[in-house]
Image (cartoon, rainbow, N blue to C red; front, side, top):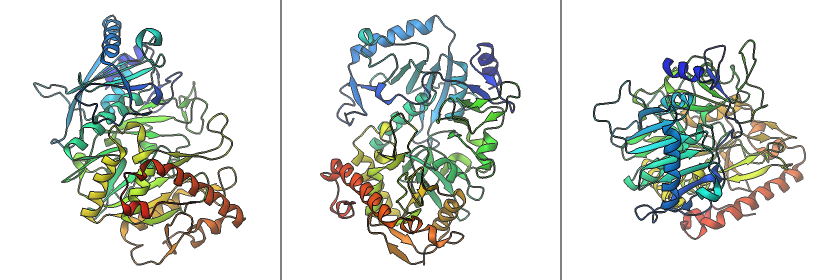
Amino acid sequence: MPALYEHALRNGEGQLGAAGQFVVETGEHTGRSPKDKFFVREPGSETHIDWGETNKPIDAATFDALFERVAAYLSQREIYALDAYVGADERYRLPIRVITQYAWQSLFSRELFITPAAPPEGFSPQFTIVDAAEFVAEPARDGTRSGTFVLVNMARKIVLIGGTRYAGEIKKSVFTIMNYLMPLRQVLSMHCSANVGPAGDTAIFFGLSGTGKTTLSADSNRPLVGDDEHGWSADGIFNFEGGCYAKVIRLSQKAEPEIWAATHRFGTVLENVVMDESSRELDLESEAKTENTRAAYPVEFIPNIVPGLMAGHPKTIVMLTADAFGVLPPIAKLSPEQAMYHFLSGYTAKVAGTEKGVTEPTATFSTCFGAPFMVHHPTVYAKLLGERIAQHEVTCWLVNTGWTGGAYGVGKRMAIAHTRAMVNAALDGSLKDVSFEREPFFGLAIPTSVPNVPSEVLNPRNAWPDKAEYDASAKKLAGLFFANFKKFEANASDGVKAVAITP
């Protein structure tokens, strides 16, 4: 790690923060470029891939020609190679090699993947990720959509990345590979965090970026398995990674002490975080560079983790959403069929002002809470989830970490303290014997009481001053759920169709 710091500083790739962090700017790309991601169409994988807007095809000859150009480009430059693994469970572990143009991206990869002190003798990578960050493609010549490209070749077992300095492309490309490989071995690959309670009770948290997946799983009373990517095999769950990649915009030392501490130490890589040039202190409140400010750090930086990053079968599943319409309840119990429905829906919402032209909350539906990274048809993952929920009698909850008392701009964000209290109650069995009321727009079962949470918070309609306005907003969101589910209806079971939301 220190050697990579030295190289990165010598190369002018970033700066040191006051606490020894490595702080970088990723330039034009401060997030992933999903429209520039393609799969090489080849006989071995093409019948498994769910082709469409997310998984777009490119031909092998185009890949080969661009790969040769990138290889020639990198051969003239100093590059960094890392041998590592993906998957804490050795039975499903994938050996990988990550080749990067930047030293800091190699440091990032060392933290995010499972990296032994020294690779075992005879290490042989099954996949190679090549990241030529500064190589910009020529679309007319190279067959890409733009100067940026993320190309996955399952036949050659190579991922080729270029035209972007954002390191999240490396992480998510590897997750994409696991999402292809694991279901073929009857392992459910999941975009989720996971932790374990005092009684050995495992919980997993599904959720898109900004919903609290990392925050809620970092709990001083529940050791962490991982914050983002896991597999669920016949024997339990295991982390794919060896590190965490936390969103740090407006990170609070008081509300999220473990993550805050991890972002303030030597070894952490910070992407696009604003820093005072003289004091080198961080300004985590600022979104001057992007809303998507990030910290990458080894999982060991969290003080309480599960040794080996593996755990038993989950007892509880929490599906997180940040509802900017302000109409979903802060917590609701789901039947197994409802859990399948919400897994397929993968709902959250963009808030007004986050993108040009967005003036009101905008619904986002991301299948399996990770549509950009899913390779097979969504029902492949949903079927595996449904089987495991039934087999292990898992209790499922929907938790809204978004807005209450009105939509974004009118209402207020759910208090983290209240959300933690509700999640804790769901995990420790405090809600086992409470009564529930049925919410009419989404068919959700809302608890009438939760320890340490004011009762008026629990039913979202009660928090709105104008009940007619709440009804109109709830009906609107129900209509969006209804429209989105049409693409799954033909393949859904009768039980899931029976609980589908209707306007």
